[in-house]
Length: 261
Image 1 (cartoon, one colour):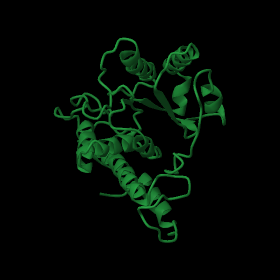
Image 2 (spheres, one colour; image 1 turned 180 degrees about the vertical axis):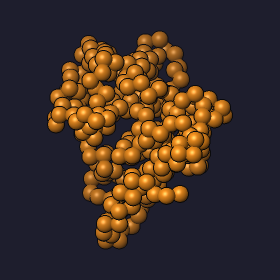
Image 3 (cartoon, helix red, strand yellow; image 1 turned 180 degrees about the horizontal axis):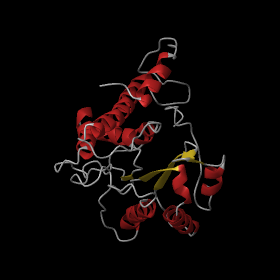
């Protein structure tokens, strides 16, 4: 198949990289980090798989064999977020979280090709696809604690607050065993433009309001800020300014740096 623009740009960028000094792959990649070279290579493979799925999506669409081409290109750093969590932590994912999904699938003991196959079946609207039965390409799987969402912008943020509330209240208030472990952390990923939507603002405000009153909410909001929302640029510093709220701790990392993330 012919290369497309995204693939060409990627291969050209990789060709300019220079190899660093040889290191023991079992050692941390830098001082102060627990991420080893072996783990980096494992995550990089899942990032590549995510990028190749983007290419396959466009190729299938050109042949009228695929029906959904929203890709994850540029968001591969969320593989590190998956690696920092456990496969039992419920995840409500942005539709560009391909690398997260593939990493989570492998974390759960599945073969790499199984996660890839899940996504491909979604692209082809296969009835046997485990996420939504071919109705819509989304990331989700009942065995991976990935709760399926639609691509409707920010619609999953209020739901993630509810999941975090349920985790804490089930254990602390009513003594019931929830679907997830009592020490689980919910994670919710989204793009920088999403934070301007009413659904997102509702989720942030509810989380802030609850924690301000002392209600524990084990929830990690992950804003994948690439500085642009479809075709409109996000003002520099806006994401941090919008997300610094009472009861919510804000921190940032370079998504292109696995160890930092």
